[in-house]
View: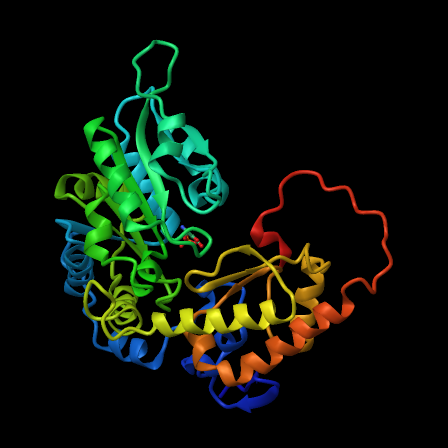
Amino acid sequence: MKKVTIEQNGTTETVGAHNAWIGYAGAAGTDLRSDTMTTPTASMLAAVQSCTLLDDVFMEDPTTMELEAHCAALAGKEAGLFVLSGTMGNQLAMRSLLVQPPYEVLTDHRSHIVKYEAGGVSSLTGAMLNTVVPKNGRYLTLEDIKAKIHLDDDVHTCPTRVIELENTLNGMIMPLEECKRISVFAREHAIKLHCDGARLWEAVASGAGSLTEFAACFDTVSLCFSKGLGAPVGSVLVGSKEVIKHARWVRKSIGGGLRQPGVVTAAARVGVDETFGKGPNGEGGLLKETHVLAKEIEKLWTDLGGKFAHPVETNMVWLDLDDAGCPAARITELGKEEGLKLAGNRLVIHYQIYQNRDYVMPRLERIFKKVFQEKGAAPNGAAAEKIGEASQYQSH
Ligand SMILES: Cc1ncc(COP(=O)(O)O)c(C=O)c1O
């Protein structure tokens, strides 16, 4: 039998057969780079063992269809479509909601579809992107949108056909009331609304509104299983039967039709039931406690005099490392010395970090203290010239 060495929590263990299904005791328990680092659990493995293994291109797989129907019901929508990733969900939504050029998509200048989807909106739809800077620095308001939207039919104009809102964005919540205001306005002007809800679960867990209430504001919502919910693969796009039928078509055209996806949709269902919770308010789920831990981490940093790049509202803590005089690479290095995986100034507090908090918290505290001990100690060298905008993914 193949011997495998596992390093975790500062100890090294050699085991006969590699068993990766060890939850927070595995790599995820010390990885704060992203909630995508959560690893599937033993109960997911059990679900995979008893899933159905039928063809989903033929729409014959009960495990997959039940997951789609369950998510649609939680969101109060007619239909759902399992997709391989959050990016695929957003891109299928754009391709399905946009009909006839000229058209533009209006969105926050920091949104995932603008910054981190490899330019997919342009290549897959040909749409113009109208990127808006929110005045409050947190979320777009109706006033921000009204100031930049293109409603007229002047021949020179590229009309806004879709508004895309991300919730949460950088861990910050777009309040339900603002979603409702924007939704009323969009519907008055026959503009479609898509929500990149990769982490809408987090907004719901924070008590900002139910999944059904948020989703009612939008034509389509994409929800990720492989981030805070801890599933290995996938997202779901929910919306009307008509839009989802079209999205299924587009999904097929880009090679996203799946044969026996029960092996991943079964795990995704466990993520929804156990990590998010049983009902549209995340009843009985595990996300809320990660927010409480994020607040404790916020306090640790604040007590040392630290500031934040964004407010802590859900599961992300954005340290202001510039203010602390700490280069992103330095905190990543300090993390490594303490056995924690960090990626610059963003700490993502997922549920497996919460489960491993007794290990993580003292180490994080030592790292934070070192950052402030070093503040001002380094000689003032000439700042390196920065060319271009760095991606948040480039610091690791
Ligand atoms: C807000 C948001 N939307 C969409 C995505 C895309 O998800 P995926 O990596 O599954 O394509 C991410 C990924 O981190 C994200 O943070």
